[in-house]
Amino acid sequence: MAFEAHEDSDEVVSEINITPLVDVMLVLLIIFIITMPVIQHTVKVALPRASSSRDQTPTDKLQLSVDAQGQFYLDQQAVSADALQERLRAQAAREPQPQLYIRGDKNVPYERVAQAMTAAQRAGLSRIGFVTEGQRP
Image (cartoon, rainbow, N blue to C red; front, side):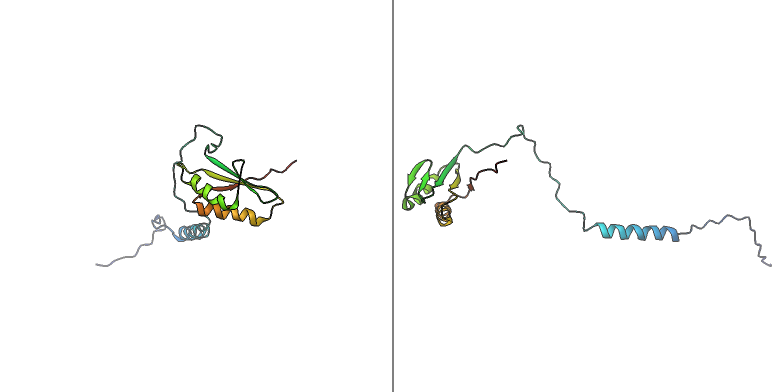
């Protein structure tokens, strides 16, 4: 039995050339590696929708004013520096706890505003804000 080697040029090549495929895959891999640090990973949360588009201002609020002479006024009533912390402590015990807005005169030394902040923190008030004037056009 002799085997003969026939070379037919009419045969269809059934092999796939994967070299271009590997090239494309490497380019895609490089693109993904470069863009991964740019993508931010966040937890997707379905946030509730508000029925009203305007902000709800808290109804429980205190206003602490410090005039140019350094005098404290809690809700328009003059309060001495010694009695301020006790008055704020009584307000901090309310439920829900009110938010304190500090209005400091622009000419008052910052030390007086810092004293008001310290008294509020020691009294247990955790929500403190500052009132300022907006810029005029």
